[in-house]
Amino acid sequence: MNVLTDNFSTYAQGFLGTLQLTVYASVLALVLGFVMASFRVAPVAALRAVGATWVTVLRNTPLTLLFFAVLLGLPRFGLVLPFQVFAVLALGCYTSAFICEALRAGINTVPKGQGEAARSLGMTFGQTLGLVVLPQAFRSVIPPVGSTLIALAKNSAIAGAFSVTELLGTYKTLGELGYDVVWTFVWIAVGYLVVTLAISALFNLLERTWGVAR
Image 1 (cartoon, rainbow, N blue to C red):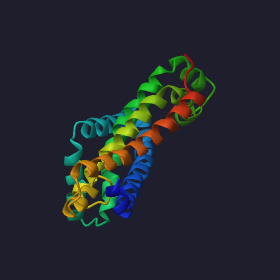
Image 2 (cartoon, one colour):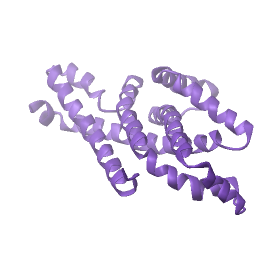
Image 3 (cartoon, rainbow, N blue to C red):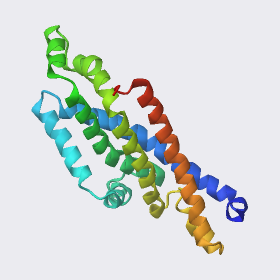
């Protein structure tokens, strides 16, 4: 227990860093995932191609490689931002590809007649998607989206290798101070468990409230 009590501020700083990465990257992933899912089902071929390319490239790129591309590549083009912002971009963009596919799968569960009926009433594609299709699709995608965001929280550990303050990176500081590595990682694991259980509880609540009845 002394590993935690003696270094509570270090753990707290790392925990806060992980929490911030998770929240900011989740928001970015959800927004981009929604946009790309809309592109994937759009009636315009060019938009479908953009969405398909986004998903194909990001889903098949190792996350560590994407971190290298963002944190080390973008500054070469004059884009200089704090490392935490770069980490949020890498995590958010990577996860958005999986969010996109989860949303697209949910959209495909909505009967085609729903969209056809909306169009027969004069609704535009945006209105059909936003007012008819997505509200129904949302109910079926709650569990997979929740699982994807839990994975995002755990993937945030990679950011520690790129000078970003997060929970896993605390083991370096504590190791240099001579603390037992086993207990150091035990408390790190507890921190990640708190974050992932909070996400799980939130999506369980959403599923009970709006999920598809079985």
